[in-house]
Amino acid sequence: GESVGLHLPTLSVQEGDNSIINCAYSNSASDYFIWYKQESGKGPQFIIDIRSNMDKRQGQRVTVLLNKTVKHLSLQIAATQPGDSAVYFCAENSGYGGSQGNLIFGKGTKLSVKP
Amino acid sequence: DTGVSQDPRHKITKRGQNVTFRCDPISEHNRLYWYRQTLGQGPEFLTYFQNEAQLEKSRLLSDRFSAERPKGSFSTLEIQRTEQGDSAMYLCASSLVVGTGKEKLFFGSGTQLSVL
Image 1 (spheres, chains in turn purple, blue):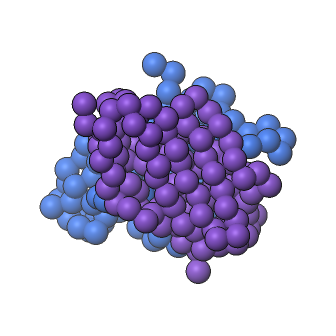
Image 2 (tube, each protein chain N blue to C red):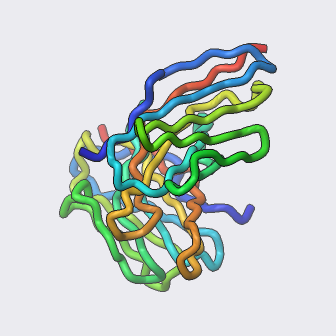
C-alpha cells in the first residue's frame, strides 16, 4: 500500500553535531518527496524537496538523500542548532495524477538539540 | 504578515454542534488545501481547490464536512454535527502553480478543534 514511515520517533543530538533523520516509503510510483519541519503550535514548514530523478539535493545546512532501490529518504542537518528542535516529517506525492500538493505524510521524528 | 492565515486558532465545541473555520491563503496563490492532523501523526489530506473549483476530496472527508472557496481567495471548512473523533488540528495550505513546475505548499498555523 501507500505509506510513508519513519525509523526513529525521537532523536536527541548535541548542538553542533550533524543530525540524520530517516524515512521509508513503500510506493515505488512516488515521484516527489519533501521534508517539513513543524514547531510546536505551528504548521509544517517546507525545508527541502527532491524529485525521483535525483538522488541528492543540498540546501542551506540540509541535504536530502533519496535511495529508490530501497525506498529510503533521509534528511541530514549539518551543525545542528537549538532552533532546529522540532518534529520533522517526510512526505511523498504518489504521482497518480491530481495535484502535487496531495501529500502523504509520515508520522514524524522529534529532534531535540541539547545545548 | 503575508503568510497563510487561519481563524480561529482554537475552537472548543460540544458534540453535535456545527463549526466553521476560515483560511486566508497567500495573496494570488491559486491552490488551497485543507489537511487534518491528529496528535502525534502527520497531516492527512482532506481536499483542495484550484481557484474556486474543488478538484479533489479525500475519503476522510465525510458528508458532514464541506469546504468552499467562493471567490477563489479565502476558504471555509464547515463540520456539521461534530463528533469527538473530529478533534484535531485543521491545517490550511496554499500554493502558486504555474505550468508544470514544482508545487510548494505554505501552511498556516492551523485551527485546533476540541469536541467535548
